[in-house]
Image (cartoon, rainbow, N blue to C red; front, side, top):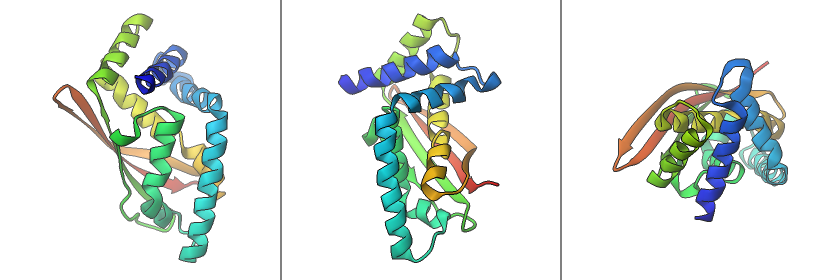
Length: 189
């Protein structure tokens, strides 16, 4: 129950700050604020992943970012979503197929929102007077949490890196909601 409470608190901060508004970057800003609130955890995450990146480069004798993401995708995204944003680690699935180039990464991340998590979202929407469907809010939360890794990952690899969404599917089953995210990560100029 403590994990659900932390998850609810995270969602409440995002909803209060952004009201799910994309205009003027409100939702992106809300996620940046959430990252700032977790500065200690971000610092640990950065240090851990920098070590993994450096060791991987030595072992593989390459610095192809796409291969790194392909091999280490779960080590990159599961801690990011569970430690920084309080998504439940055991409900996260990560698969990163081979990218089309040395710098382009493919991402497949899914998360299954439980009945209790969906209820928490629904209750917060009512509490904050936000008119939105809980499944769309869940979808937005997952997409933005994944995409928000871009700045941090850029620091790890030493190059500007952005994640772009290509497809998102939602599957409702037995009161749970599975969101399947597909995207690509690229080194940008």
